[in-house]
Image (cartoon, rainbow, N blue to C red):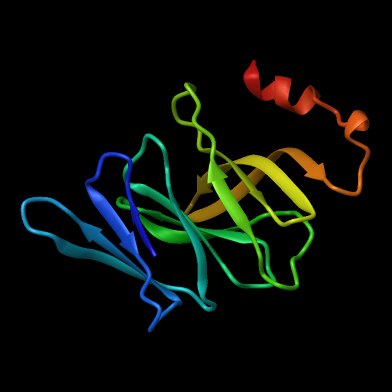
Amino acid sequence: MVVFSFDGSLLATVDQSRPNVVWIWSLGNAPRLQSALVHEHSVRQLSWHPSKPELLISTSNSAVAAVHLWSLDRDPAIARVPIARSEAGKYEVSWVKTDRPGHSLFWFGTPEEYALGTLALQEGNAQFNVLYVVNSNVDANSFDIMTISQYAT
């Protein structure tokens, strides 16, 4: 797995010989290893923030719904996401590009349920703040879109 930051200054890789380690490389004048993040389980997905080259999230093949957050200027953190567990550990994550400065909005989910939310860092701990949840077991006409409009204001 090879993923470049949006500006090409950083590279995150996962080697299949060690699928639980994310290697983060700085691509300045001479490429160098910036960091190594060891996960308990195999890494499933890596995603750089669409406008902050120093912000990376990853998911792993764990039964616990969580994102792993890496940043240049802080210690790595894990944020649990309050959605149903995926026994198969199949979580997907995708950043949502927004014009609101300082917000890190993204979708996180399983085949049955997705949550839209933001990350908040407080005293070294990461917290996922849920803005909206989509569940495949719910009628699409009954969704409360008020949570989305509250974020937009």
